[in-house]
Amino acid sequence: MAEENLPIRRITRMTGLSRGLIRQILRGVREDVFRVRQSSLEPWLLKLEGEWKGGCRNAAELWRRLTREGFRGSPRTVGEWATRRRRAEATSATSSGKCPPVLKRARMMTTARNHLSKAEAIIVAQTEAAVPGLAIARDLVERFISMVRNGESNHLACWLGDAEQSLLASLARGLRSDQAAVLAAMEHVWSNGQTEGQINKLKMLKRQMYGRANIDLLRARLTSVV
Image (tube, rainbow, N blue to C red; front, side, top):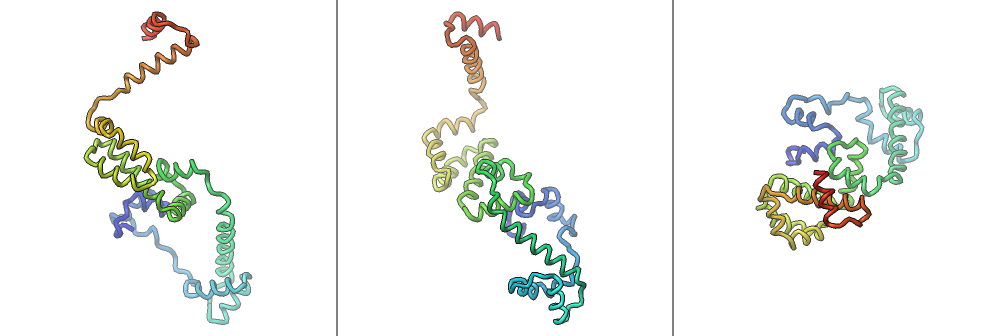
């Protein structure tokens, strides 16, 4: 995945491993993560799949058929394979009916994507594969957040052009209509947050008096609170 220039975030989602572990693998610190014990069944997996799809689901019968072909493993090995195969089929049969709600899936694809379980990572991968536009929209959201946080106003025009061709088209049109204000927010350190906070405090005081306060009373209440 790294050789295909996939970012660590995406590798984390696709494998279910932690970022730290993936970094260790890419740096060559860990080489044993994906190493598995050689199984005597590996040369017979295609034969087993064929028998299974042909209708033979009994582990003992599967073992007898493999033995006649030259298999030297134990019945337990074949039985464990059959058990895993049944569980996999049962999981795939029931997973479609337990899809998370839309808001949860949105969080899984955005704010919570770095803390997904393996099952959630699979759901995210399936969702992005089924609706590629969602993956594009997610990448655009990440770019916009990074652009605003780092004050990269020179990237706004390019971002708007890309966003207008995506599921974020309505957001892009709204930002373009007020582009000067958006650029100012990214280029300057000034903020109207303090003003908005005072306005919110004033509205709170007025609601406490059921909207019946005149200017003098509001001024007195506001100065006493300050």
